[in-house]
Length: 104
Image 1 (cartoon, rainbow, N blue to C red):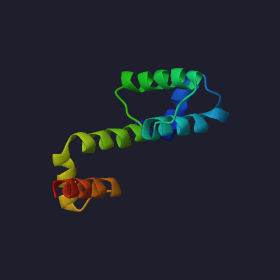
Image 2 (cartoon, rainbow, N blue to C red):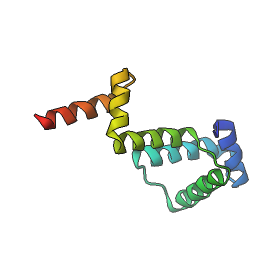
Image 3 (cartoon, helix red, strand yellow):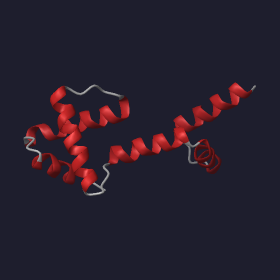
Image 4 (spheres, helix red, strand yellow):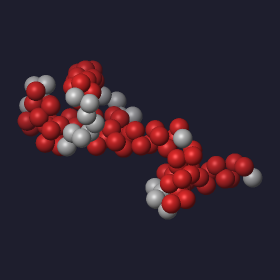
């Protein structure tokens, strides 16, 4: 798991100035989770950043969120099992409600 200090270290290796690292990580997260459009330079840096983590078999926190969301979208059985356990997010609850309303 790449925690924030490690993420900053990766960006340092990729020659991102210390003053820019927090903002860059913020935009990377928004890109992954909210479809935020990166500039061409940021998109190139993002690909390098992701490749760096992948070579080390690491994920950062945004990866965990994105992969969990993908799992819940692709596997309704997993989303339903979590809902049954009472460990739902608002997304899972609304997804289950929508699915029920479309069956009526």
